Structure formats: C-alpha cells, structure tokens
Image (tube, rainbow, N blue to C red):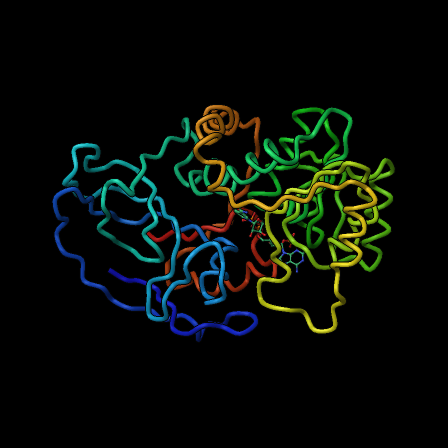
Length: 334
Ligand code: NDP
C-alpha cells in the first residue's frame, strides 16, 4: 500500500517538501480487524494543525508518521462479524491506499442514497460541524441575519442553508467571482460578498442593513475586522475555524483582542468556540436523520472538488489553505 507521511514540520505555509510518499506492506487482518481499500480521502483545514507540534486539542502527527485523515473505504476482508466484504465504511485510516483497522474504529456509511463521498462532507464531519455549531451556539431565528465565510465550502454552505431553513437571511462571504456566483445562484443565499474586493467591509455592511445576529466564524483575519462592527446586541458567534491564521501570524497585522473584547462587553456578544466532536454524543444521530434525506433528495445542496490520485493530495491540501478548492475537497484514491 502507498501512504503519505509527514516528512518535516512546516513553518508558515506548508510545501511539498513537508510530505513524503512511502510504501507500507499490508498483512492479513487479525481477529477483530477489517482490511480496507480506500476510495476517498477527505482533506480538511484541521490537518494543518496536526502538522504542527504546538499544543492543541489533538496530538500532532509525528514526523515520519502517516498524515491523519478520514476516508471512505470498501471492506476487502473482514475478521469481525459486524462487517462483510464489499461494505462501504468510513475510518480514520490516514492518507493511504489500504489499511487494516480495528473494526471498533470503523463505521458503516449511511448516506440515505446520496453518494458515499458525502459521508466525508455534507453528511460527515464538516456538515455536522455546521449543524452542531448552529444548533447549540448560533441558534438563528426567523428574520435574523446570519453571516458565514468560506461559504462555498462544506461547513459554510450548510451553515447558510440551515439559516435559510429557519427563515433567517443568509449572507455568504467567499473568495472570487465563481464561488460568489455559486453561493448566490446555486445555494440560494440571500446575498454574497467577495472578501478579496477592495471595498469588502463596506459592501458587507451594505448587505447587512439590520446588522448581524449570527456570525459563524470560519476564517478570522480581515473578515473578522469587517464583521465585528456589524454585530448586533446579543449576537452569537460560533467560533468554528480561523483558517486565515493556520499558517501562522500574518506580518503587519494589528492586535485584534482589545476591539474584540470591548465589543463583547458593550454589545453583550456570545463568542463560543467548539470542536465538533463535543456534540457527537448529543446531536450526531439527529443530524444524520434530519440531513440525510434532505441531501439525498437534493433539497440541501453541496459541491465536491475531487482530485484524482493519492500522490496529488499534498498539492491539493496546500492549495486549500489559500482557497484554491471549490467545494468539499476530496481525493479519489481508487
Ligand atoms: P473549505 O472547503 O471551505 O476550505 C477552506 C476555505 O477557506 C477556502 O476555500 C477559502 O475559501 C477560505 N479561506 C482560506 N484562507 C482564507 C483567508 N485567509 N481569508 C478568508 N478565507 C480564506 O473548508 P471547510 O468547510 O472544511 O472548513 C471551514 C472552516 O471550518 C475552517 O476554518 C475549518 O478549520 C473549520 N472547521 C472546524 C471544525 C470544528 O470542529 N471546529 C470542523 C471542521 C472544520 P474562499 O476562497 O471562499 O475564501
């Protein structure tokens, strides 16, 4: 089997030199294990965190270790009664073509008839992140204004659609013309703005004449600067991701803390960070049951950006951190 390992830890933006391809021999599965052939690998922003040894909510990938990642796989051989050959499952195999896994760490895929790849996107971890963050923290109400950035991606696209389903106004922020057109015309957001526009902050203000009640934070950086003055009294901010700063500090940026804390005080804001796994015990089942049929029927829309071949995973991942993906980024491994 082929695997991609962490060759070295990046400083700043990762490059191809931080990854290395290795051949790993796969033996027959032991009792209780399943032998898997990877179909799709999910590439996600959190992987930048695993490449770093800075203290975080999860352990880093060791240098020389296989890059962490969730995959959708076909069971080739099973030594566990819960799985049989041909089952389509998801597992944290990492960036590799084949793996033997303890069956207790493998889950059957149920996408209600939608393609199995959605188990890594809209019906998987990113979709659940949108669902959990909105249900528990955002709590949008009819008539409110909800703003989300990375709006064409798997988290942001569902945040906006969930907002509209309760009668809130969804305003998306995305990078570039194509993504903005998609968010407005295909996803049906009420409005969209390009964060690369020189007038981004004033355009966003113009699209939120009644202020912002829920800002689902995916980005940080200059997007947060534009959002902060628009947040209403009692606005809720699920702090989900800060992709603008995953590659490290941006030279010349000011300290945002004083303005942020002052706004929290004066406008009674709720900023609440979360990692989606926190909500799994209480909300995952409801998420699958509610969203599965809506995705399968096409009522909830999603977009996938599929790259062919495991060897192309590093380049695709590096690009995602600058916004070169358009939709949920997946690698078709076999
Ligand atoms: P996406 O597929 O949307 O990809 C990331 C997108 O972020 C890029 O396409 C780009 O979109 C945007 N982006 C990148 N850099 C910048 C920047 N400097 N300024 C503004 N936008 C930028 O990712 P996901 O939907 O998978 O994830 C969205 C966010 O949610 C991430 O921050 C991720 O870390 C977080 N997350 C958090 C989880 C949790 O449990 N808390 C779980 C899953 C995801 P564009 O071109 O439109 O700007």
